[in-house]
Amino acid sequence: MQIQIYLFRLILPNDEVGILVITYDLAKRGERPLYEYLYESIKNDIISNVLHAGERMPSKRKLAQHLAVSLITVEGAYSQLIAEGYIRSIERRGYYVNDIAQLRDVRKRHEHDSVGVPRESYALDSSIDQDHQQKSALRLKHPIDMERERASKSVDIDLSGRAPSKGLFPYDRWAFHVRKVLTNADEKVLVSESGAFGSRALRKAIARFLLGYRGMEVNPDNVVIGAGSQVLYQLIVQLIGRGHRYALEDPGYGRLARIYRANDVTIAPIPLNEDGIELDSLRSSGASVAHVMPTHQYPTGQIMSISRRYELLAWAAGDDERFIIEDDHDSELQFSGRPIPSLQSIDAQQKVIYLNTFTKSLGPAFRMSYMVLPDVLAQKFREHFGFYSCTANAIDQLALARFIESGEYERHINRLRTHFRANATELARAMRQEKLTDLVLENAFAGSHGLLRVDGPVSARELADAALEEGLLIEPLEDFLIGRADALDLSRSDYLDSRLFIDHGALSESNIGNCASSIARAYQCCS
Image 1 (cartoon, rainbow, N blue to C red):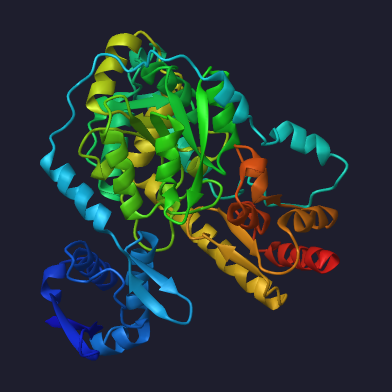
Image 2 (image 1 turned 30 degrees about the vertical axis):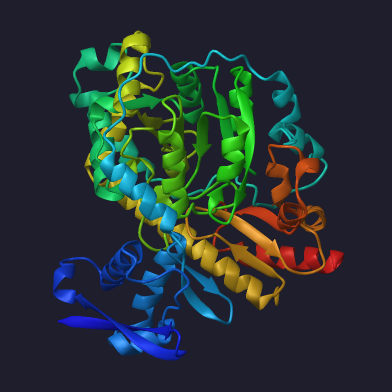
């Protein structure tokens, strides 16, 4: 069976409308869902320049009718193409192919170049730029300070993300695996110090999980386990060196900035644009390490476009001293579309340190994270830091390995996705019932966080203050700024001023309606 896509293209100089026919063989899709095959086919034609930059795509409805498939199938394919930056949607005009010429150039270079030559030293000789450090002083409020400021207010609904989701973790099954470890594991394994890399059983389980879910081919010998991401951040600083300047996305994760600064590291806050971290700002910052969250950026929820991913990899490949830290903190919780390819999986130069955590999926009390090092850094870690003991509890590591291998971790992830999808859907519906047409949820397609955009005359700060009076804690996006607020241009200032960070993970079915009502009352009070 074959399907044909008819794309309308303007032919010059006669100004006649021509029809381009592209044929895809459905028999080749194998076991893949139809929407995924359609997405892959269109993506490949964009990359190979069969579909040109600026070309208008068929509408979803017309394409669905022409292919005799459901509208949902086409919506799924288009949504994934938009998420990865291959096409864009222009309101009341339609869908258009993005210009990915730079992506093609970078892909060719990656295919041509060999893996980078191992290096002995990664620390720069230049001293820390104290003036730059002062100019990049954190504007972000410390969580303790924020709680003190709000101590006089009663908070009934917390959308700040600091309140954990409840009733979702299968404690009985976790207890079962802990008992099995205590019963069956060799006593020597339980009471001995863990090596610097952590439990091999857990590292092998993580490698298999990443291959199945993210398509990442990972050597278990390159996986390092730690008691939370904060421990791994500090190990990375020791491994790469304090002489580097570390670029952070701005707005971003304020605790990350504080950890780096506490480790005597110079940070360079880099603004975001529609594709992700701004490359021109990164190049001019003098940074040699870029810490990014390309799959679901915190706090904006933004996805880094595929072209920006390749541009970032090209930046890293341009100097032996450059590295990318890919912080993939909640990628497994994406509930819309297929998983976005990780930077690590398309890195031909071994410039990416992949970092992930189980804290988001298992709960904040469960301090377990891991990183996947490039070969040369794994060897350096082995030689220079092999004397360390793993900071994660040995019994928890073995229990988690069993939890993953049994398939129960994947089932738990599926439950979380269902919960977060239901929360996002029901919150949007409840807001529509409250007739909050000036408030729009953005980037709420994965995990529990996204943005609330205010299209009316009210600022994000005014809405947050009014919401607190209603017992609802929600934070303006500008509170997540790492760099100086007075250095913002007008467009960035307007963007920040009209958006709030929202984390719906702690909401339950019973209080989503109350949450929407509180937002509505707050908006009415200040509009």
